[in-house]
Image (cartoon, rainbow, N blue to C red; front, side, top):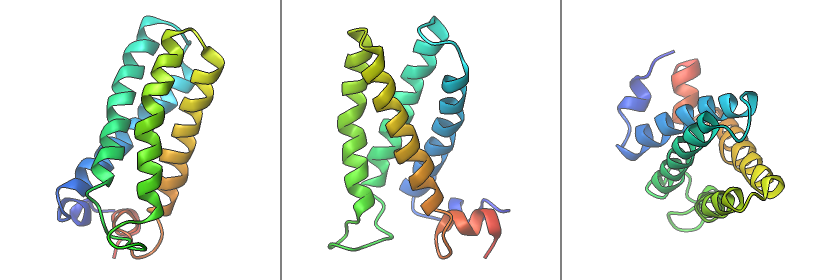
Length: 132
């Protein structure tokens, strides 16, 4: 395992990757911790900021080009940027069920599933984890 491929990449890629790894860790903490508490809300705001960073930074990453410089992952990024504020609004309105559904969807789709695709051969995170 070596961080060299990640650190040698364009600046948006390490920013995107480190924010995603932090969001993944905090997301796991959020699932395990009691809900509705001050720590949950505080960590939640940090997680939202991290996810906004992950989604926004991905718009400057163009390794996979299917439609000009864009790929389906960019649609996912736009969806995350739209759904994050909706989830926060749902929490402020005490609509816990919808807030929870949206956040779980962002976590599972935007971090876990998208993250697994970064481990495919030829991708930077594959080189980081498994070597060249």
